[in-house]
Image 1: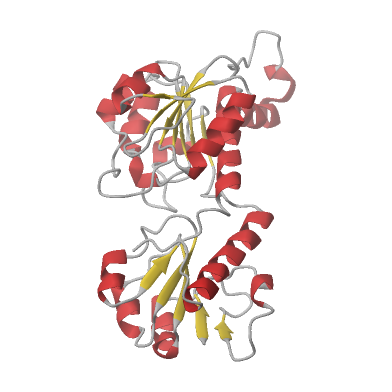
Image 2: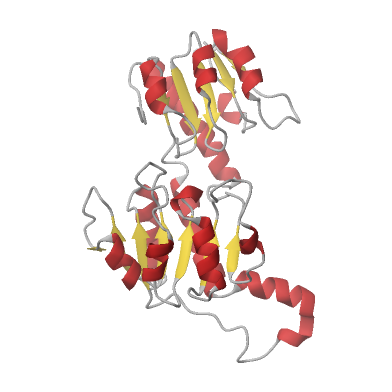
Length: 311
C-alpha cells in the first residue's frame, strides 16, 4: 500500500502502520506538494490524502492509475470533483467528527469578539493607549437573551447551539433536510429577520454558493452580527463589505473568504469586522485528531467497511 500525503500534517497518526505500507509526505520545510509533484508521485499510489484548502485537479485524478481512495483532511470536500472521482471508481472520504468541536468553539469566539468589540479594543488600546478608557466608551452587546440563527443544523451547527445555550442565547435554525427537536425551525428569510446573530454552517454546493447576498443581508436586523466559519463563497463578500460600510450591521466575524487567501480590501479597514485565516478547526489537538480520522477512513476502506464516503 502506498499513500501520498499532499500537505504537511502531523505525522504521529502514521507511525504504527504495517511495514508494507509506504507514506510519502512533503519533505521537511515544504508546506505541500504541487499538482505537478503529486502527478509525478501518484501513478503507483492507492491513496491520496488531500487537504480541504487545496484543490485536487482532475489531472491528478487521471494520473492516479492505481488510485482507489482520496481521503480528504477536513470536513469540506468542495476542493475535489467528487462526481469525476466516482466516474473513475475512486471513493472520496472526509473527516466530519474531528473538526466539529473546534469549529464550533471558533464560531463562538467570533461571536464574542464581535459582540464585545474585542478586536477593535485590542487594536485601539495598543495604538491610542490611555485615551480610549471610559465607563461609557467601547460598549459592546451581551449574548445572553439574544437569538442565534443557525443556518445549517448539522454536526457543527448542533454543537454551536449547545454552546450558545450555555451563554443564555435562544436558538432558531434553518435546515432543508431534518427537524432538530428542541429548537424552532424557520425559513431562511424568517431566520434572517429574527436573529441577532446569524452563524453559517452549510457545505459549499451549487445551492449554497452566494446564499447570503445583498437581498439576504437587507433582511437582517440593523444591530445583527454575521458569523461565517463554513465556506467563503456562501457569502457575497462584496455585498457584505458594502452593507457593513453603510452601517447596516453591528459587525461580522469571518474565518473564510471567497477567494482565499485574498480578502475584499474594504474588510481589512473595518474595526467591527474580526478576520481569521481559515482556522476554524486550527488547534493542535484537532490537527492530530483529523489525521487520525483521515487515516481511519483509509484503514476502514481497505478493510471493506468504508466510513465517511461522500461520493
